[in-house]
Image (cartoon, rainbow, N blue to C red; front, side):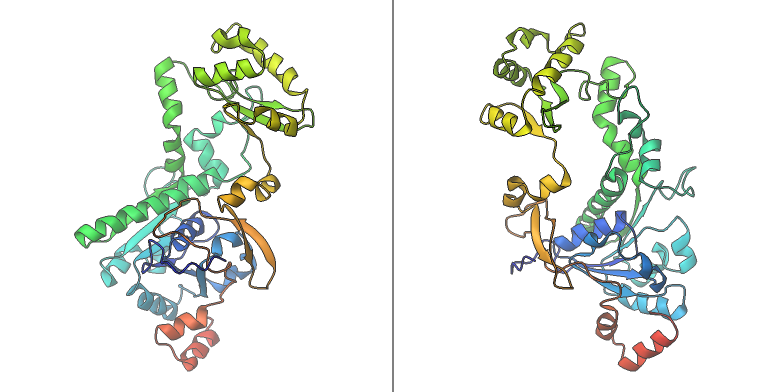
Length: 385
């Protein structure tokens, strides 16, 4: 892990994360990467599920605590006094049953920033419906735009709703609230709906819809396979390249490079688009991906290889950009992980510690908050930890 001495932008901020699975832990991982102290708090009964998702546990501490018990809540509230941010991902109403809801926490620490991340938000007709990433994508309208026009909607192989709709918006909300607190001294409550976050990603699609007056059809929009200039093509070695020659100058450059100058004035030609796509499919199957890579070198064309995760881990681009970095697990095993995408030159984020194992820091944290070894033993005996 990177051991840079400079503090991150969020150094001094203390985050208590009660969330599990992906959206909340991803949110707090970003905060931790940029210097916040993040303490994950989970009930011991979830230990068997602690392997997922382990990579979000980097730069964090992890403790076990049973919030259903009076003693467990007492420990939590002692920690609340020194906290800046709380993150939770329970269904609406659960934190009230546990006695750790915003109003209760605010009474102890008025400056607290409390972020709830749920599938459908704290209000509205779907607030109590359970769901996962695919459900939020579906309700938001995003899923209807993913996949082939003649096939059912395609579920993407990564979690758009969890990561972008929930986790990233959670970070944005927390940073905005921290900035507001600097000016007003007041904390506040943040209601993050993953479905809201997905719907917000429809901005350009809605713009196209309003501009054309036509409904969007899966795989048939300007930026989704309808035209030759913005499409994917198979190579002779069963790899794929992606073209993104949207601006006329890039389309012209592509046509010149491929010796298809007769296509230059037909970029958006509805009568010729299918023929051009078919022709380029045949053309791109004549070379391997490596040959096309060499062909497009320094030709100022918007294109890219369709890489797999393994390709990314070996990519010179991501190595040099420190988006793929080496780290050592708690067990001393060498492995790779993803780096930090937001590059700050004065207060850079860092990868300081490997993913914390379940309950690893429980006793040290309790000692920090004034609990003796005898107290800790008693809490263990009562199944509080």
